[in-house]
Length: 297
Image (cartoon, rainbow, N blue to C red):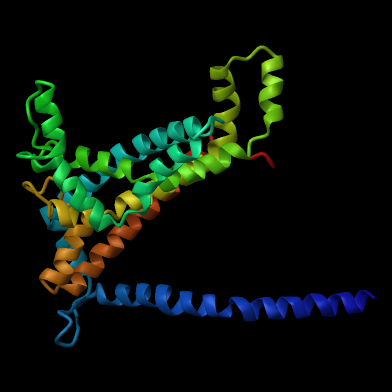
């Protein structure tokens, strides 16, 4: 029986490898393969037409001395610093409100989720109308309230903050994840806290937040990685302006690659972005040890 059990285990292991083989091969060919090739390209001068010419670390030396690299990194970090905490807090509180059991709550859940499934190009077109300084929806509301009109994303000071507002509006996926986590918290914990005399706020702080901390951390991590790679809405809405106020790193990388055909330099930029995201992710993981609570620990 013991030997038969081992044979069954080996057979299951073999078939397990067979079934995951396509995924592993695809990961190697379409993810790790291009990544390694881009690392090689970053040490070359290549316009995608003529053969690549090896130039060593010249691309990395150039990006260190290029002012627009620092500008784009600063804009991207500024956007991430605004978006991550604001989106985390907003989506979590919205999920808490949507977790109540009242008539018609499914309608409200649908309303908050819909923006996240709207194609980002369509969302960008919609928000271009909302932000339009001349006839946009927001300025129409401001004028009706007697407030001065704003330039929104068309001003250097407002470009990034108003793009953050748009991004928070599109964060329905995070709300759904929070809502699933909230519904997984045992009611016995809240009943025990009520017996101990805790009010709703105390239960929220001492039960809801600690129990949800792994999910909060996950959504923060996803928001950070997504913020650092923001491209489409900026490309459509501002093209990096005004005065490079919304020149995100991904947009700068795109320009160098596909507008100026400098694939070697763009590949070097992509690896810089990869290292920045990796460093920020590692820092977030390190900080999470102090506030993320896991039940099995």
